[in-house]
Image (cartoon, rainbow, N blue to C red; front, side, top):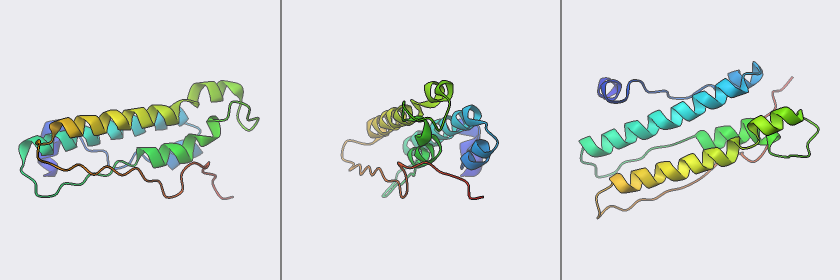
Length: 135
C-alpha cells in the first residue's frame, strides 16, 4: 500500500515534527509542514476510498492537536509573551487549521457511498494550552 500511495499522492508524511520546528524557532516552516501533512493525508484518504471497498475505514488527522500545542501562545492579542508581529503572523494558525479540517471532513463525506455512516470525532488530549519545552 505504501508504494500505491507514493504513486497516487507522491509521498506520505506521517508527522511533521512540530516540536523540532518550534524549538528551532522555525514556526512558519513547521506550520507549512503541518498543512502539507494534512493535505497529503487527505489525498491518501480520498485515493483509498475511491480505489478500494471498505467494511471499516479510519483516518486520524493530528493537525488540530499539534497546532494548538504549538501556536496557542499566539492566540491572545494582548499577550506580552510573544512580540506583536509574531501574534499577527501566527494568530490565525489555529482557526485556519480548524477550517482546513472542516473542509477535509466535507471532502471525505462527499467521497463516501450514500449508504455509509461517517463518524467524525474531534479530540485533543491536551490541547488549548501552550506547549513549553522542559528546561
